[in-house]
Every structure is written in C-alpha cells, then in structure tokens.
Amino acid sequence: MVRRSSPDSGATSKQQGGLIVLAALLLLVAPQAAAGDAGRPLLADTAITAAPPALVTNRRARLAFTASHSDARFECRINEGVFTACRSPVVYRKLEPGPYRFEVRAVSLSGLADVIPAQASWRVERTFKLSAGSVSRWAPVLGRVVARAHPLASSPVLARLRPQTPEGTTNLVLALERFEDPSGRLWIRVQLPVLPNNSTGWVPRSALGGYTAVGTRLVVHRRALRATLYRHGRQVWRARIGIGERRWPTPAGEFYVRVKLLGFSDPFYGPVAFGTSARSDVLTDWPGGGFVGIHGTDAPWLLPGRVSHGCIRLRNEDILRLERLMPVGTPLTIL
Amino acid sequence: MTDVLTLEAVDTDGAIQEAADRVSGDSRAGFFRKGFLVAGGTLGASALVGAADARAQTSTDVAILQFAHALEHLEAEFYAEALRMGALRGDVLAFARVVAAHERTHVKFLSGALGSSAIKKPRFNFRGTTESQSRFVATAIVLEDTGVKAYKGQAPRIQTDSILAAALSVHSVEARHAAWIRHIAGKPPAPTAFDPAASLKQVLAAVKGTRFLAGPIRTVSGGAPLFTG
Ligand SMILES: [Fe+2]
Ligand SMILES: [Fe+2]
View (cartoon, chains in turn red, cyan):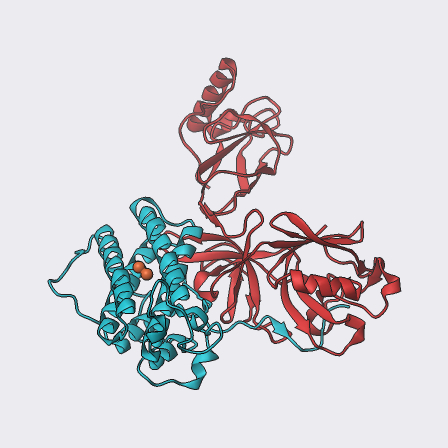
C-alpha cells in the first residue's frame, strides 16, 4: 500500500481542512507536539489490511482497513470521488474494466481526519464471457492441470484437475470466461467439480480441448421438490423429484452435468444416471468422492420427497425422457 | 506466434491423414471410423450439384472432393468459432465475417456435391487461435495459403470437367482470402509470379501442424454409478 503524500483534497469543511494542515505541520515539525492530553496522537493513523491485487478479473473488490485509534470512524472514496462515511470492509460490485484507486482515512474522536489517506490501487481487466445467457460452453480437460484463484501462474492452487472422471469418461469443465494476460497467454475460468461447492478457478487455455456449446439448463428447486429443463430459456421438461434427506442435503449452487451412465445393472439407480460436478458436503468419503447424481429409482412411491443421500432421484419414465433432452455439459442450478 | 503452428505436431486422430491416403489411392479401412466420418452410403452414388454428368464422376473425384470437404469444414468452423469468441476487432473482424460466410458456402456446396459421401464435421480444438486477434491472423494465413495450394495441387487430377470448373471457382476465392489476410497482417499479398502447388503430403503436413483435429471425447459410460444415491 502506497501512501499518498499530497495534501488531502477531500470534502471536509474549510475549518477542518485548516486544522488538518495545522496538524500536519505539527506532525512534520515535532510529532510529539501533536499528542493529546492522554499522550496519544490527535490524528488516527489509517492502514488497509485487505485489497485486490494489482491486476484482477474479478469485478468485485473487498477492502478492509483499520485505524490506530479503536474509536475512530472512517471515510472512504474511490477514483477521486467524494469522501463518505464507511466501515470496514467495503465491498464494490460490478466494477467496469479499468483502473481503480481506493482511499480511506480514519477520523479520530476529535473530528480530525488522518492527513494522508491509506490507498490501494488495482486494475479490473476485461474478460470475455464464454457462458452467458442461455448458451454455455464446456471443454474437455486434456491432461492433469491445476486451477488457480487468479489468471496468474503464481496464484494459489485451488484444485487439481484430471483428464478422466471417476467413471472413466473424459473429464469436462464448464467454461465461464476468458482472459488474455499482458503476455498474450489465454486463461479460462471454469466451474470446478470440487469441494467447496460453487468453486471456480483459472486454468491455461492449453489445458482444455475444443468448446462445445449447449443451450440447455437444468434447474432444481429443492423446496418445491421439482426439476425443470430449459432449452434456450424455454421449459422443455419438468418432473417432481427426490432430494437428499436433511442430514445428507443436496447441495445448492451452480454445477454442471459431467457424465452419462447407460446400460448398468443396478436397479437402485434406474435405467439412466447422470453424474454432476456437485458433491455432498457431508458424505465426502463416499466411493467415487460423493458426487451428486441424477438418476432413476426402483422405489418410485417415495417420490417426491427428501429421500436420498444427496442425489436427485427421478421416476424412471422421467429420467428416460430427460436422457433424450439433456446433453452432457448442461449447466445445473440447484436452488 | 510461431508456437501456434508447428509442422512436427501430430494429427491427433489421424483423420486428415486418412482422407489424404484415400486420395492417393490407399484406402485404409480406418478412414470411415475416425474423425472424418462419411455421412453414410457408398462412394460415387451421390449427385453433384448443378452437374449434368454427375454419374460420370469417378471414385478419384469423390475422394478429392472429400479431402476438400474436410479442409473446408476446418476453415468454416475456424471462422465461425472466431466470430463467436469475441476477440476480433477492426479489419480482422470485417475479414472474418465475409470469409466465414464463404467457407460456410463452400462446405454446403461440397456437401451437396458429395451427397451421401459427404464428410461429417469433425470435432475441433482450435487451441486458442480463435480467441486472440494475433493468433487468429497467423492461423488464418496458414489455413488460406494451405487451401490455395491444396486446390491447385489436386486440380490436374480431377477427371470430370464440371468438378474441375467448380474446384477452380473455389480455388480463386481461397486465393483472394489468402491475399486479404496477408495484406491485413502486413505481408505481401501476392509474393510471387507463380504460385507453387502443394502435394497431398505437404497439405497434410500443414493441416497436421495446426493440431486442430481433436481426439475423441467419451462422455457416456456403461459403468456402475458411484454417486451418492
Ligand atoms: Fe473455403
Ligand atoms: Fe478460405
């Protein structure tokens, strides 16, 4: 964090501004002279404790800050705007691509603002949405690769991806957005089939194969015990379902269909089973990793209801119809 | 962007190699099983678009058209994806829009000419070349130059006049594409007085070098579910 040394130009009153200049002079000439009766400085010192890195693709920015006086209040501004009262943390959402500078100053009980606001600068980079509206894209994972928190080779590793699923099929990921870094390297943010659910991470473009577009989306309403398939925004299939018992809840979030199983001989799962990228938050030691499936049943009288270990259970006639309508790679939203 | 196209790279599922082998008269059985699947039916049983002597076409002509069809699929999908990927700007975008429509028309024309012997669109992985302007330009030059040389190389071997006429009308358009994108890239649009033809082998090497033909993807299994149930 770089601290700006130019005098403050914020929206303080003239009187307060004068006091600040005076206090600043006192600080510069004889720091101890600015101390109050209790021996603590009149002015609180401001520090930023959390800020975005210099280059981000995330349009959400979270900034946390503290003051040397625990009873200080804060004033914040972004991109040379007006200082307004704020509290740590401050979260900005939907920031447009471009440069940002955040400044915060502590205002001590005496009403004096820190002369030199603490400052953080970053840049929101433009990305291209690969899945938007009713069209989503998935791509196969070509080899072992790590997914990172940011599109940066030094960024923390969030997950390790393999080219195959536990079922032995080609592993695939939903491609969300693309970023070309300053050196021309392409990165793709993908939905990750890992815990915690709803994780996304960045992988190099070269780790993925070609894209396949899908226009379908499956939406599961847990409270209504109902699943609906949309194609280009229009409902094409709907069924009542079984979901996880309360102790083994079906997780909520954004996922995708990763594999389709046909021709197996386990009547418990019915005639067709889809594997998804969602995982049980509780049954993590389940064989195969506890992935949530969408499948048929040999006990249709239990449906609809909260009856499963987390899977989405359908009557066999419903899963057979779904099998014809829903391609692998379809995004899955569980509400 | 020399890393995008290397001639030593492999044709991951051998599809274009097999299409080329067929043109050379080496009809390997694997041809129909791999990436470029013939839509069905037998060679020579198709109707050539607008040609009165469609029945006169020989198996050599069909094989040549199939190879051309494979290349046109590659070009057409390359431009179509580049337009969807939102990375092109200015002159390059204008070029891509026009050429995408031409390539679509070439594919359609050859599908009609080949009828039941048409080549099915294979699965491609464009490896990011459709997702950045500079990679797109470098790749478009290679694809168009290759297309020009490929048509030229096969023209003398075409046995049916109407097919030769059709191939030449595509050939000159490919040459215009090549000159246009070379001009955009700041390269000489017409570098020589005589264009060399490329042998099948050379065309194959160029296509192989792109590594755009993706291997098979398996998303369906017969295994027992391991899901939470
Ligand atoms: Fe063409
Ligand atoms: Fe062309």
